[in-house]
Image (cartoon, rainbow, N blue to C red; front, side, top):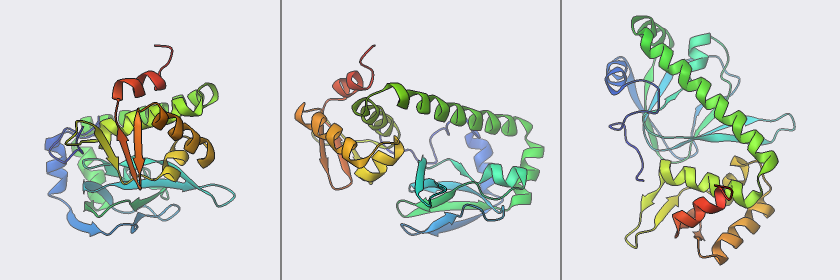
Length: 227
């Protein structure tokens, strides 16, 4: 459950060899925490390969509220659809921790995909899967209790970003309660109540930007009570 690195197989996008070939055509750049990598509404530009760190993807709602779409880790592409379609950036990407990327010029990225049509197909399928997952989550929000949604999100973060502690538990760091609430479209108050319930049941322990999963099996049962 440790954080992925660029040596791990990416999730349904480019193969490790393709990433290596693409990386040779770009330049390395680093970002500090809270620095913006891509800005919603701006013209398309370089595609980024996230090499290390963690980034947050958000969009602006009509009322000016920031909506959290998710987090991205090493090995993932950023800004690829904007570059492919030649349309403005659809979301803002912000460094959630010190991060490094490889910048691939827009035209170079398009040429790479022309030379590697299978990579284009996998990239489009991965985008489709991500959108389908988002639709499924919206439907679940209508039927699941907040505590179940909290448990489901924490399980996902366990797999993607969790790290085993010396005590044998799983630690999830760098995420706030507010971000947890945003990620499941719930109020901070109801999320606080759900976390308190999980803490009382000795499933979870919390701290500042820290969630410690004490009993993953119990957390899974909470997330999926009908299984």
